[in-house]
Amino acid sequence: MLEGIMETCRSKEPADQLIGHIDSYLKDKDNQYAIALEGDWGSGKTRFIEEKLAKHLEEGEYDLVRVSMFGIATAEDLYERIVMALVHLSDKDMRSQAAAKTIGGALNGISGALIKRTGLSVNLSVGIQSVACLMLRKKHFLVFDDVERRSKDSDDLALFGTMNDLVERLGLKVMLVSNAWGGSDAQSMREFDRDVREKLIWKVYPFRPCPSALAEEILMGDCRPSEDLDIHGAILAGVEASGCVNARAMIRAHELIGRICSLEAVQDTGIAPQNRFNALRDAVHFALLTSMGSAPSMPQNGRRENLLSPEALEYDRSVSLYEQYSDFSVIGKAFEPSGEVTKDDLEQGFKAYIGKRYPNNIDTLDVREIAAEMRHAYALDDEKVDVLAKRYFALVSGAHYSVDCLHDVLEVYYLLSDLEWECPFSQNDFIEYCKKVIDADPEKASEYLSGPVFCADERRERRALAEDLKRYAWAELNKRMTSQLMISEGAQGLTGRELARRLNDAAKRDVKVLVNASPRVIVKTFCREDASNQEALREFFVHLHNVRNPDGVPSAALVEWIHQIKNALEETNIETKTGAIRRRWFLRNLEELENRFR
Image (cartoon, rainbow, N blue to C red; front, top):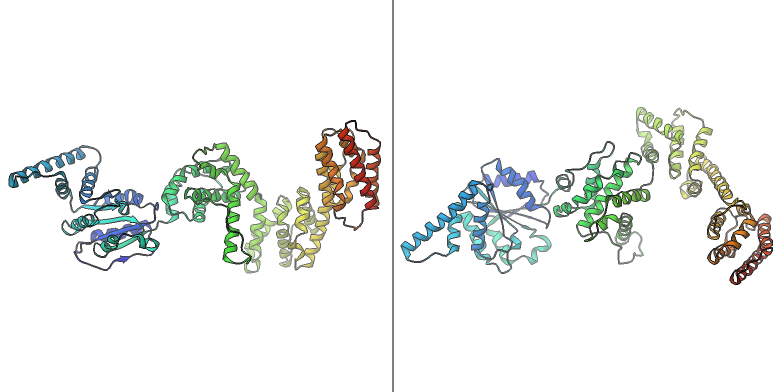
């Protein structure tokens, strides 16, 4: 056999290019050598051989004969596997039966001839080797799979000597398939593996499947189509995020991913398509990580002091991924041995994940997209800007976007003004539209408008408008707090704990609005409640002096309010012994608070 220098193809080879290399090998009639295919465990080597390569060879002159070397120890074992592979090469019909008869006849003929000539009987192993050689033809392409999984006690010299004999003496084409032999696994490779490659194998092709190709073959076959959502794109994005090139992991995750893709929530046009896309992408990402045995977990090592070090950044990334994965816990549960999840579990889990991770509506997403494009408006043609402007004006007047993109809204508004673009509404109208958005969530708006994104704004007019909107948000919030505290004396069902929560929420926003809560309602609620609710209400007043007062000192109205509560409580009587003690404590707390605020 001609010796040559092993050529290793290191670049990533798509399946069609790899088949092209194999075709070139099969067409080489001048040289006798074997080739090898190596790839990571679970990457789909056997699947590629049986489904892609075998179908391709059916169109040509070669028949693929795949022989698994799993557990093989001797040359006789190898010949027996070859014979069995040849028997099952054809469909299980008359051709297979004829092949079986050929084996039996060949064995009898060989045995009879040897007995006649030598007087010695022939053992089965010699017969199997002879039968294999008789059955093999030049049209057979022998593929020895699972090479690294042969018996630990195998006779490697005999095994690879047999392969060499098949190549040199019979002129057959042979390919050895195994897990990756190079890189970090080189030290654990058997000595004979290294030696045999120098002589028997001329070319080694790495099997590195394209993640998108694997996904298209395994994960997308029966996906339910959607009118407004790119389901295939979301799956591919999830595969890319996971870095999965493991066919077995994809096959294991296939059923769950298919169930998720068929959820009604995925098809729900009431949820922004981008939000559904992102959630589906994350679901595929998490399913594949879990299937690969790499489910996100909380990192054990602490965060590094250097905030920008690679270790600190990786720690933050791991924590963030773990938190996201925890928000979609039904994914991990589905892979547990007894973790059966229903369709309702998946529906609720998917919706809850969107609600927490991707809550923005379609208008909010559109505003952000327009703002991102308009930041480069000076590099755009008028026609493009006009299209963006019309979309923007419609969204602003509709006032259905979230308060957390108010800065984008203001930025685009003033940018279009700088470009002297014709606006279909006045600035006063624009302000009213912004106030409608604030009305939907004044608490969130007041926090957002107080944030650094507005305080550091370089344009004075934008800062001034933001200040006006912030004052409006605070006023609206105070109105709501006031209405919550204006409880009629005849109202029933409000517990002491619930009243304490309302008072606390109001005090954190503006302590002055507390005076809207009726002193008599507070005292009546305290007197009728059980011990825990009485204590919850009393505790609010115990800590009221810690609440920051925007004016520095409590108002006279607030002091008078506390005095009225104390007077109303003094007029009451609680019959239970422990209740009477709590009443005395409450009176003492109010008296101390009144003296502190005076």
